[in-house]
Image 1 (cartoon, one colour):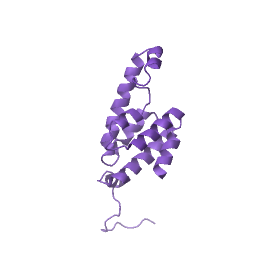
Image 2: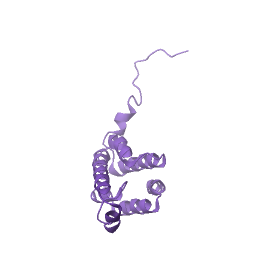
Image 3: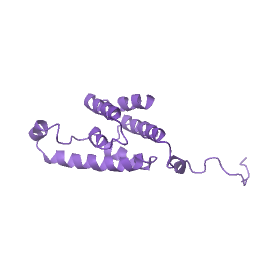
Image 4: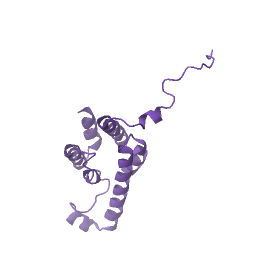
Length: 137
């Protein structure tokens, strides 16, 4: 039997609005990392992941938009190069699905250690595992 409506306030009427409020930056980074790891583990493409993460708590929602733009731009540049050019200039040209490069341009949000772990995960082909270990630290 359904309960009659009451005038009592709900504890969490809109959970999404709570998640978008200003959280302490370490907690916001933890939430961003957990969501990023879960989506990566589900084999969602990185640009799509970052589009989903644009509703993350500040400042990582805005950072997701920046990261997505840079990855898409990098994919376009990389796609315009021949395989030989990409191999010759692999340290200077963007690689498809590279995440560490735009992260490294935002040291106020992503520490050197965080970026190095993401880079190692990308090179090893285990970004989701690396992100899971980062969120546990």
